[in-house]
Image 1 (tube, rainbow, N blue to C red):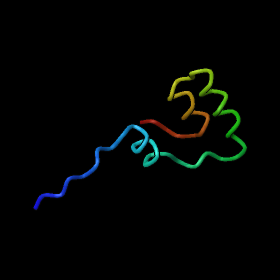
Image 2: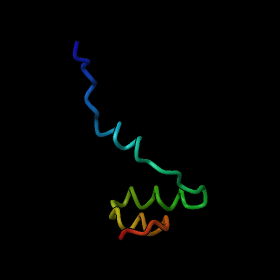
Image 3: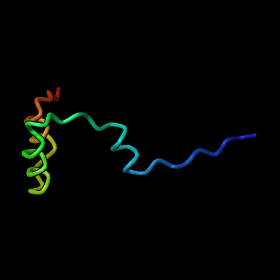
Length: 51
């Protein structure tokens, strides 16, 4: 018998790939999200290097 798996929603994918945001940067990142800053800009603030 074949098992039917639930479809992943966008929220599920986001939760699985989310990372810890340091408390000292949280307010700044939240402000950037409200201002619709680019993902690369936010990752730069978090110190994530995109190769």
